[in-house]
Length: 241
Picture: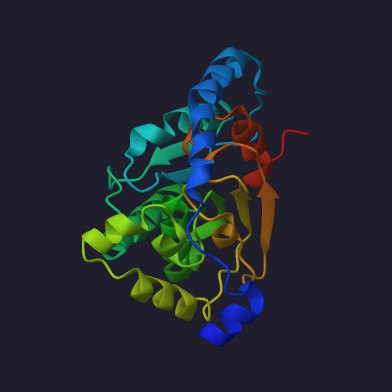
C-alpha cells in the first residue's frame, strides 16, 4: 500500500492523541475496582476447551500487565500463555523474531493453529508476526492497538524520537506489509477516548476479515476492565451464548 492509497482510505488527519484525553486515564483505578467487585460474577463456561492463546503486553509493560486477562481466559478453559519476551521495550525489529518463535513453538505443541491477543503495541506485534506464519494462527484479537503506523500515531512517539528509532520507516514498512494480507479473523477493540493510541490508527481498512468493536474503557485500564473481559470470549470466536 502506498501513501496515496493510505490517504484515500484514512485521509491525512491521523495524529497523536490529544493531551486533553489523558484525564480519562484517571478512571483506571475505578475500572480495576469495578473488575475486582464484579470478578465473581463474570460468566464462566468451558468455551476455551484447551485452545492456546498467546498474550502480548503493550509498550513499556511486562507480562504481568496481562495477569487478569490470563486468569479470566484460564477460567474459561483456554490455555493462556505469556510471551517469552517479558518486558515490551518497543523495538519492533528485536521483538518480532521472538514473537514468531513463540507462535511456532506453541502451535507445534498444540498441533494446531493458535490465537493471539495483544494489548496496544502487543497487538501490532501480534498482527505483523502473524503475517509471517499464517498457517500457525487461527485468530487475532487486538486491544487499543496501533495497527496503522505502529508507534507513529501514539503518545509514546517522542520516546522513539529520543531513542533514535525511526517511526516513519516503521510506518512505511507496515504499509508495505499490507500487500501481504492477514487472512484469519481479526477482532479489534478500540476506544475513541484513548489518550495513548489514536483511535483512528486502531482501524484496519485493508484486511479482508476484520471486525471493529468500540469500547468505553480508557487505554491504561484495558487490561483490568470488566467491559473488555466480557468481550473476550466473543472476540476469540467462542461466545458464551
